[in-house]
Amino acid sequence: MNNQGMVLPMKKKLFFCVFIITGFGIFAQTLNLEQARALALANSRSLAKYNFSIENSVRDEKSHFYTMLPSLSAEYSASMNYLDRDWGFVNPVDTFNSGVNFAVTQKIFEGGKSFIQKAINAIATESVRKEALAEYFNVLDAADNAYYAALEAAATLEAEESSLQTALAGLSIAEIRQASGMINQGDYLKAQAEKESRENSRNQARRNLALNMTKLKAITGLGEKAQPEQIDISAYEDIIQVLAGISDEEADALYDRFWKILAAANPSLARAALNSQRAEKNLSIARRDFSPVLSATVFSASIGYSTANGFGNSAGGGISIRGSIPLDYWVMSNRIEKSKNARDSAALDYISAEISLETDLQSALLNTFAYSGSVLSSRRSLDYAEKHFEYIMERYRLSQSSVSDLGEASSLLINSRNSHIRAQYGFLQSLSKLRSLGAVDDEEKLVKILIGNE
Image 1 (cartoon, helix red, strand yellow):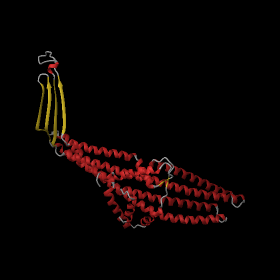
Image 2: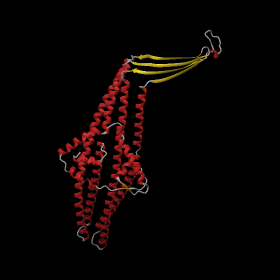
Image 3: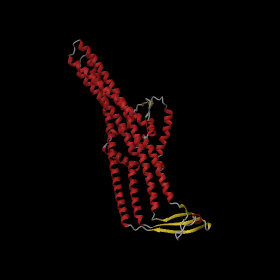
Image 4: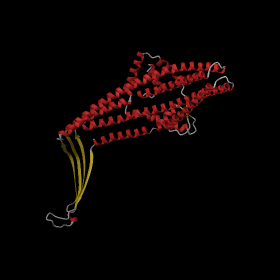
């Protein structure tokens, strides 16, 4: 991918954002994931700052290129005297002298430092582009996490509301039985405590939903009450089934496949490699400080005027060579040693980035495997818990089960629901993390990589 290609995804998204924002309107009631991503990109101040950084880095490249071109200079001077050599006063006008000089100078040799510096500036620009690309995926990851967190909080609130209604129904039955003397005061108080506990959990769920919606709106820049659309988790059923039952050999093969993608595309690792290259170039340019510097004046012209001689001009074409050879060995030797240390430090940074990325990849894949299995197991657990609760609730209505039995069945049901909700959105967030690590902008491509079709 060329240099400009590094920022193309951002430009495409930002253009798409303009369309989304224009068409979204202030009266929109729903927000889908693609809209949230596009709005987050458009609203990101960090990405905007990186655009300025890239532009400044390109300008630095141009500035250095200009220094390699012939330099133009112009000098003007004027003088008058009021004392002669014998310390006598003279008329200053009679001694007036002025002149203008133009020159064109070209550096012809400096040990190749200009070309090395040109390469360093190009590496610096590419490094900034990699940083911008990393931030691009960080913004997408943040948008995904905020979107999924809002949906998870909404699903949790719905589950807590249902659990509260169950507790209210249980309390209503308990009140009738307590009034008729069918249950003792202890069981009635237990039903009241269950209702208060469920109401407190419902209130906490409301708070969490409001907080997560606030975070989502802050990332997307939306001020209106747009609600996120639900994600159809059934669309991921095939990949969940595959990853939940993955063998150790298949997991190792998937890791190797993903690592090849990361080694080629991960912007953080690429930036570490570029920093290592830049440190090597800096060492090379420091070693060339021992080289002589030669420059030539290829053209000069001057125009002068004096009171005594009037106007005069002269022009010259030719080569006047000036050279300088540095002799302060101790200064340059110290600079070289510092550059060597910087190069070795950059090499260590690359190794650290590689190790960190390997750890992140292993963690992300293990999370994806674990959440895939949790989606399936929590789904089965929820199914059993629902059937168990229906059985106990029916027995409770028939006075064949106690308040404690109903409370235990209700607790099992709400815990199973919440576990299933966490597993579903944890799985989606793990996919988002893998996408960011591999710099894979297309989710369909990511799924193909995971199931081995890419």
